[in-house]
Length: 397
Image (tube, rainbow, N blue to C red):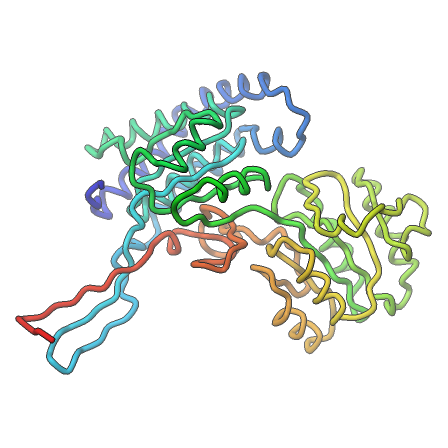
């Protein structure tokens, strides 16, 4: 186990990393180009996440710089108690130890996840996808340089260059102690990790998010929220399902307007019995589609009878990530927000805000759809466990 570095040293490494990312900007982009050229899959969202350009490098630099400015998440007092016998009891945050993150195609995760883990006193094991190998190895080389320049062990950030078989073997019988695993990616990756892991796993990344247009909705807000929710199809906070209150005034005109705007963005529209009567809407074949996360230029638009029916439908089919009600009625919004079982619930705002940076955390390791120990974006202050500190002078029970 690595000895906890002082907060000064951890921050110095993060700031050094920011300098190196700037210095090596062109090299990172050039190396990433070779990854992009070698990618031969047809998954557009994977390709989108793989790409590193100037603005991606800017985000990486901003991420480590911001982390360096945040309070130390380790050793924060959560509870204190003075025992009758004079013992002083504290509960304080503590690092997990070693965190393994398994992710696909996103070289920026190699910066952000490692930064969050390192700042919170954890050793990080990075297992990226083969499609981003060259980009990831270059970034890890910079982490090692930053650590060495500040006299810290390069063990803090380790890249696992494993294939699927080796990954499975490591999950089942780790060759070093692992305290927490975070898989970030598609459902196949998550299922694979859950099946083989022998330590706690935080599930992240499944979306399938819903927008409910209530009968008292502001229709301009509804359009903006739906279109913005579909503006980045590769994101787990994208919208896949739209439910329209069957009692919405001017419902047909609204649906036609929505269809034409979605079409202009090249989005294919699938519908139920009620909405497939509109041109450009294809009737979906099975109700199983309500379970699906698309990560594609695809959306389902259906009608629904009430807020209660909407809540039941979202709770049955959604991925537990994000959901929205668009309404001018505060009581209906409250009912929806209290009863929908997703990590983030919105009233008149876009699901695209379910993101550590946007929700004030500075960044995120993952977006958890689990309920233990943290839900939604997992930021710096959540990548800790806790420990009891008890000070006595000879007390026995």
